[in-house]
Amino acid sequence: RGRGDDRHEKLLALTRDAVWVIELDRRLKLDDPPERIADAILDHGRVTDFNAAFASRFPGALDAPTGGLAPGDLAGFWLLEDRSRVEELAAAGLECRGLSVTEIDADGGARPLRVDLSPIVEAGHVSGLLAIESAVAPGGVSPTAPKGAPEGVLADRTEQERQEALAHVSRLS
Image (cartoon, rainbow, N blue to C red):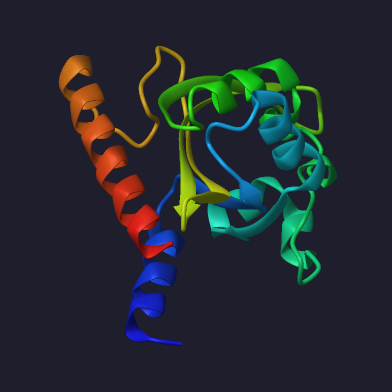
């Protein structure tokens, strides 16, 4: 384990946003049919890497087997709510910023999230899907934003910080 791994772990541990990776079948390509990519994610993908913020929402993730957890094992996981949405994401190359989703918790309550997704591409094949999720407070502002700042400035700063964090984590992955 190298110095970069330690930094990577510290970065993920300190962020309040949930960060996770689903490992996919390495034979996939971004131009494969969206249905095939959605099947790989939902039926055969495994959540193998995640930070504490993700684990706090899915306590069973901490007891995951070595090969990771199937998305279907994560009750209430927003990714499972609409297969056609996953197919749309696949058709768009699995890359998106600021995707609005709703996660349903164990008590049936709805929790709005904003998600940035990025495919992990190795040697021309999609090997995983990286996501950074942020909770959205009423009014659409991140609950971690400083009070008193104009909403547009906060949104711009938050988006820039999220993009920088996503780029950094993608490079490390």
